[in-house]
Image (cartoon, rainbow, N blue to C red; front, top):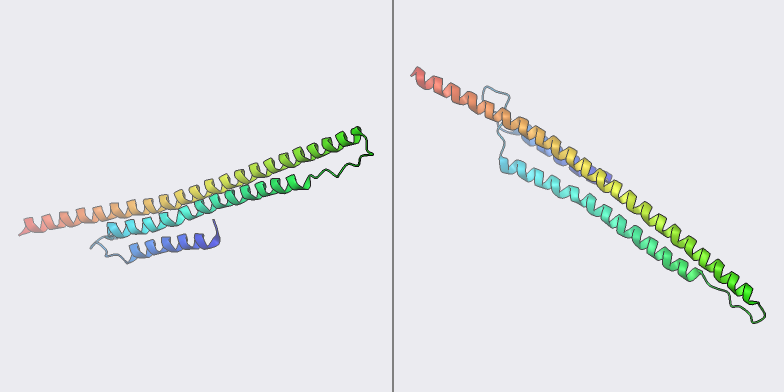
Length: 169
């Protein structure tokens, strides 16, 4: 995940926190009332930023695959058998073909290893992005659940006070 995206996500979390801190407080409690749609909107924006990193990882994989394929194609062209003069023996021709085949096989193996390494790195990046996203969403969820509990407690206290006031009159 790049620095800018991390900052965007961090700013969004700060906006959520600011929204909660600036929300109307429930009288006689440290609870606040939040607009469910507003919080859901913040979470949607948070989710929309996270898949970008996953898409970036997919683009990295595609780029690495393209580079590997390109390298394979370049290696195919580099393996060029020098023109064999008529004076060379068949043994020399066979030796050149064997060397070219060996070179091709070595380059093929090298390309496969490079592709495997690129795919492994991309998988690690994707896994890291998902873990990071899960941590952020879990933190937001925890904060929201705590706030909802506080709001419900505040409402319950208000209902109790209202009931006592009605009985008193």
